[in-house]
Length: 165
Image: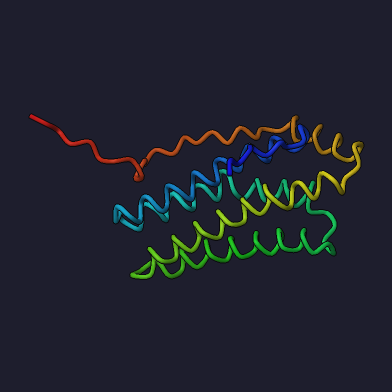
């Protein structure tokens, strides 16, 4: 069975586009663990990604989209955000022999959360919000920077190039 791409309401496209960067982040962590990259390098990247992408992404979602905090689907999105932040904090506190499993847990949390938002929560919110509300959300999102360009300088996930002399 062929999966068709999800058609996102144009007003939510900016935050939806950032989800590609979060899924790529998860892939990079998993690739780094598989390659047994030094945990400190991946922890630095995790903190950089949090500060430069994920934190502001969460704030935007919470401010514009997750406004009905009594709604069960919204509550799950908010709870996921808290679990992800808690896992990042745990990685920073317990960076030792358990770092690889913690990084893999973080990658799974973020991956699952991103797919939940794209496949369930955003389509639900697109139906729940009126066209006027979606338009106001879109105006705000389109006036902000949501390009999710990554300019991190340590590509630990890339295969090392070997010199052939």
